[in-house]
Length: 153
Image 1 (cartoon, helix red, strand yellow):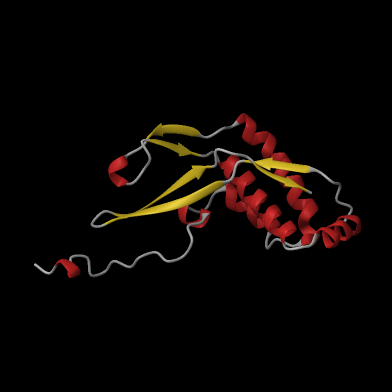
Image 2: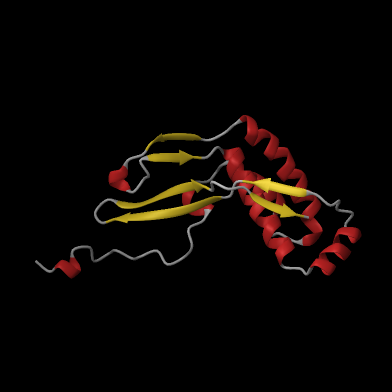
């Protein structure tokens, strides 16, 4: 038996794990993210409005912890986020990415230009991971950060 060729069609995943890996389309999460499109500073007010709208919804509709199937790579207590939490996390990541691409002075100028008030954004970032099980397939999981991400805008 040639152990190196047991799974000849296996190709390791070399790209970062994202929401597109974790969540199937169509889904409300994608509809909201498509509203925003590619993040741009001119859309920051729109992104913030959606973030605030779904943050309120996420507080009412929290994900759940279920007994995970450890045999296929899940945590013993696996977290399954709600769609609202996923939306807040993805929008929060976009906001963070946008503001980190500018210096403090540039951001101050852009906030004035686009009439964006100073504010604090808080959210729990959801990250994604995968597990490859030979002969069974690839499984994706979500992990919720234990510490809030805080963005001073």
